[in-house]
Length: 301
Image (cartoon, rainbow, N blue to C red; front, side, top):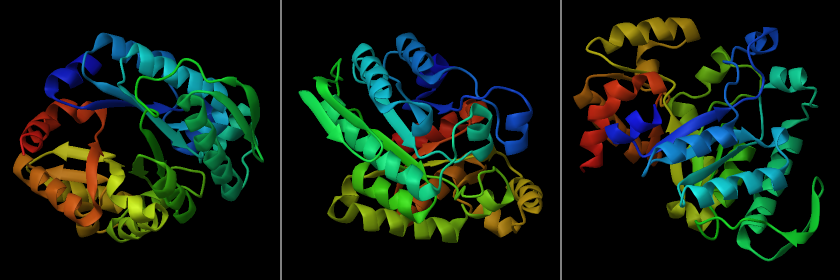
């Protein structure tokens, strides 16, 4: 699929990084089970392609020790000749934590830990011996190896949907990914509602607050979780709205949903760029072929 994505003109192939496979634990969360391990899979994708960038959207920092994760990511960046994006998240899927036997701490603790992970990984990518003493991690006496090709480090993407994590992302990330506010620890109606147009406007403000003077340097990405190239978008939006307690109009303007003709989709993505500063859009793998004309048209502008 990565080779097909490259041929169709896509820039990046992103993988979800969940660990728990099929079973009752993931069924209770409402989230699809984890599949391939991300690090070797990303390397395989990079090896099979020539221009396509690869990354995770996103790796939960509680599932990976940051020194080991930094080494894996630097290795992929080196071997792919600089085609990696490092996606990081504070973690949110409570049922997966429980299934793995990992304590699901308060969001404040998880986000504080994410802040330390980003700082530590940047030091490991940067060369020279690392000395880092934080609340959660203590590292000293060695260099990060290998050095990545992209310096000072591969682009770091942080995803989230609440104030504190988006302010952090604005402050330290190269790419900020809009997501739902998943404080419930489950994937469901509350999360989808938290991603509507009004909430996304507020999320953009939180990113601005965190970024300050560097806001123009931050790339903003969003995942389109509900997508279809169709001549009957209103009927589809009505059905989806009924599922999640939203009106047809709210679904049509929902930043994580995108339905309509190629002409409409291009115009709507241009509008969302103006409104939300979104310049990076991720779509489901099963829509890659249908959305290729949209990619070609917008890439030509």
